[in-house]
Image (cartoon, rainbow, N blue to C red; front, side):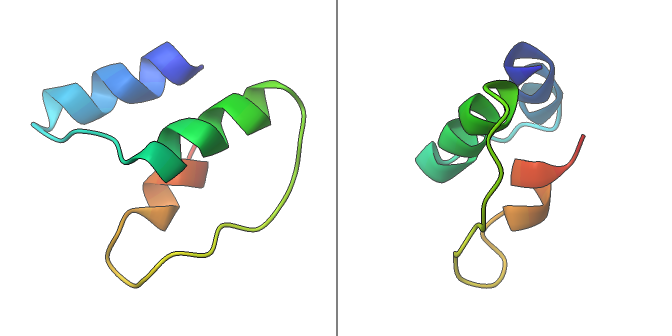
Length: 49
């Protein structure tokens, strides 16, 4: 899952933020939670799947 997201972001010319990578890892481990980050920083891409 994480590789798929990183690949997609790379195709867009984007580099994932640390919080996005951490979110992907947590989701892959079965965790749930809340992403708190400023508007426009990629929260949707952090939880999109």
